Length: 493
Image 1 (cartoon, one colour):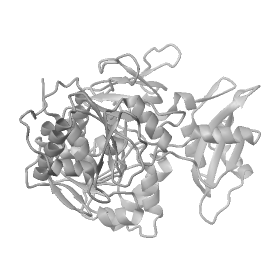
Image 2 (tube, rainbow, N blue to C red):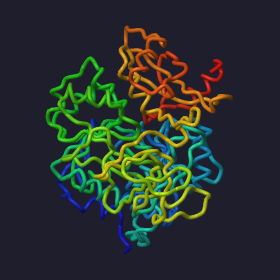
Image 3 (spheres, rainbow, N blue to C red):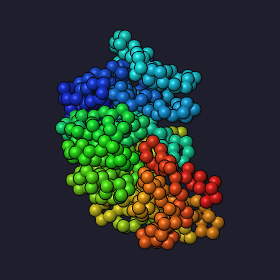
Image 4 (cartoon, rainbow, N blue to C red):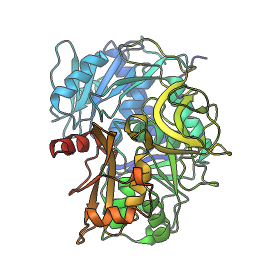
């Protein structure tokens, strides 16, 4: 059925007077959001943008960035958000690979000038050319509300690129609507919820998962432009939901400004985008009296599983969302495995992406081999144990990095840990680990290995443990195992 995507999202549970987004620059009501997104959509149409045209945005996190995103969708165009912190060369590759017709970016932001790509500016640091076009807009009579089929293209996101150049992932309208409605139902979102949003919005987590379900429910987004522990803790008072990544929870607990009473009004704490260790989850529970509800998704699937707030199961990433199907398959035979058995997670459902850029069409009805390893329990709760490519095979035996990392975090003095494999002539791979000591403490690799002997099987114990200042992570908190492996090989493995 053809539909106006933004009207569908904003009309599900909102009134014009309800505050949609609160930020340090002021409040934006649902009525304001409706008018602003329509202004942006008609201005894009007046510039000649057609249904299906791709519009790139290079903007810092702001309320304007959200309204531009929704305005692009309202015009029937495809949004291509680009991280403003990317190097210029990477921005240019993304602009070219996405085949955008127009790039909208913040005033004063350095963006490469790509031949054939029109550029307009928006005013974060002063009036922009696109702002001027909106102000001087004169109706031509050709503008119209764009109604699109649910299979129409809507959004191109780029993977985090931990093992190479990021890949462009194309999502349709169906994916965005399903994400919004499924999560709103799973977490019981209503117009009474205030969701503290401190995530970046150039990724699926911040732009879609933490934003659209709230707007679809008529709730209030409490907007924090950049994560900073003291600012977030101050804004926590009066919020009902906090969405973050494991790194955020660690920083909040370690902050000198930490106050357990700051979490008193929360009914739900959500974590995603990177593995949450049992040690961190336990510490958070002890110090705040709140359980962290893990959820699971990826750029290609938006959202796959979530822990319902009334039935959070520790250590799992929850159950499949409505209309989503999960199978665990043997990595060699591809046979479906029984509950409790570890294999690759295979996903199908309406939130699965359409295709990668410059590749053959992959419809939402096909299964996606996620590359993640996990197991389902009898109740359908999924536990992730790592990535297929991160699996270490030592003398023919499987070693899952998450098992070893969990054991390392139980050792005295260990603040952070990452386990990875490097090639070995005799054993196939060698198990390696990097650890970060807690502040003002030291750790001895030999003592750690002795402790691990009581926690792990012999084949799981790292052959070498490196003590490092920090674990390299991408901007969503995922460890860069390939970088550690490369450094370890340079040190002689």
